[in-house]
Picture 1 (tube, rainbow, N blue to C red):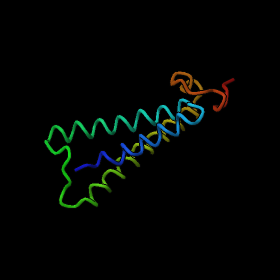
Picture 2: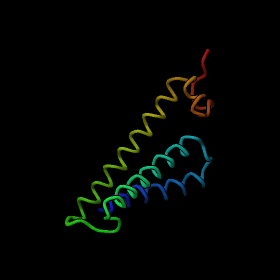
Picture 3: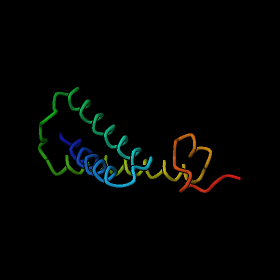
Picture 4: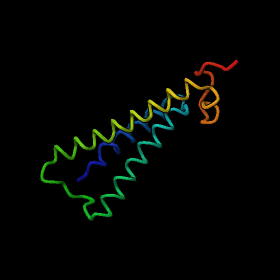
Length: 104
């Protein structure tokens, strides 16, 4: 029931890495997605009254958290690829055009 713990751990690690590096927009997007996943998990578990409970199979709870985190990373990767493929979209999303190929 604490499947939000895995995205929370990933979000904290991602925040530490982002602050130690160049603070680019792609890292910021990843942090927002991870913390959004954590907030969603907390609200969902709070709604059902199972905020700090471990289910009968803690391994399944952890695997659920891993699946949620993997989905967040996959959606982040799609966002980055979309920004790199379309410079106009990249500018609208605030992506650094030094990394993205420039439009003609």
